[in-house]
Image (cartoon, rainbow, N blue to C red; front, side, top):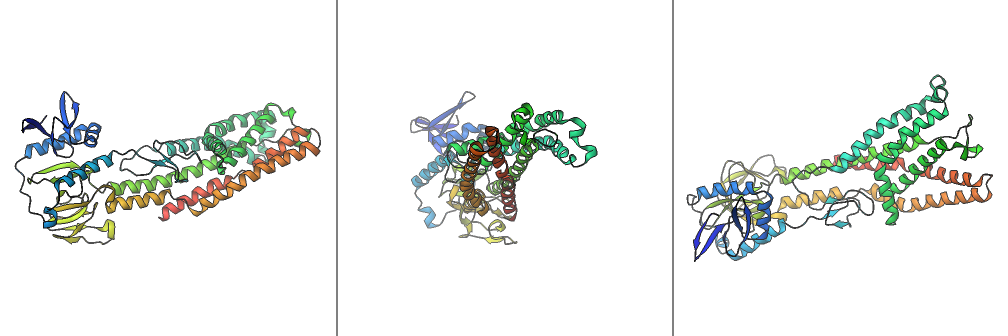
Length: 468
């Protein structure tokens, strides 16, 4: 522990924010047999996450202690600033940095969760409400991309076989026979529907449980019905009535329809997730404009490197040549030119002198500035821009809202029509009534499957993202 005796007790320096603390009352953290003391629990948590980062900065500050330049006198308004208020703001800033993240759904912003997961309404992966500069793994995009390419590899032979039926010389029905062709299609289509399309069935089931029918409800019903019917026609073709058999006496199969629908919807999901990932990359680029370390000048004129989260309103900071401004504030001393093209689009740097305003994320020129911090953390102009971009990313396009409204009525209508068709065939249809009723219901569900909607809506979202 670095420190000294003060008023009969040991004092130490907080390695995160640089404050002097009493070891008898401060919170502590042990690392490598050495105790480190902190002004608050927030600084302790930040230190525990990455001790080496703060120890390196503390070592540099400790080595230079007592040799820093004297701080120039600030304006009267700054001199009158209450030190106790500054400490309170610093503690509040540290507390804000450790606040638990909130996760929300891009399609349903009313959903709020304290842990990541899936939206209970649509099944989409939840996103962090407050974006961060750290680039995490986009597991949903990776999963959808892997499922899409496997779906393409297995669906392509099914499409080739379907097209080849129109060329007598290469008709797979004549070359292989119905039984061999049916079983080969079953082997190819089953992984596409069951594994590649598993997220759609999960979302469709969630929509039923939460009584919020959507596009995935119909996709799950349509592809599931087509696959189940085709499996029945392959495994037990004799169970189907003769009226549903083709010219060769074999019932038709819909394996390729189910596989193609799943693959197309997966393509739409990949396009949408990539568009959202590009927007997230732009947000991270904005966040990285703010430096992670600020040079805080104490009342004794000594300069300490502290984490950006430890900076509070009222602190005096030094901005060195070529560095980015850490927070919003006003120039106390010095002169330089600052590149503000991030905010204003102005191509040339803007001259800054005593009393001029500074914004977080802008780039200092060749001069050194001493600034008074006014707005820190989420209150800076840069943080507000990031929140607006993140909010725009989570907002739904008009076509998405229209699709939700249509699905809310279309899904129950399709199910009602399928049940009515099955009832009519079961009551007044030709024998065998049960088989005819089942096939009539399956036909309605397959035809109503919104494969185009599953591709058109994500494409509109991707185009909207590029336009922004």
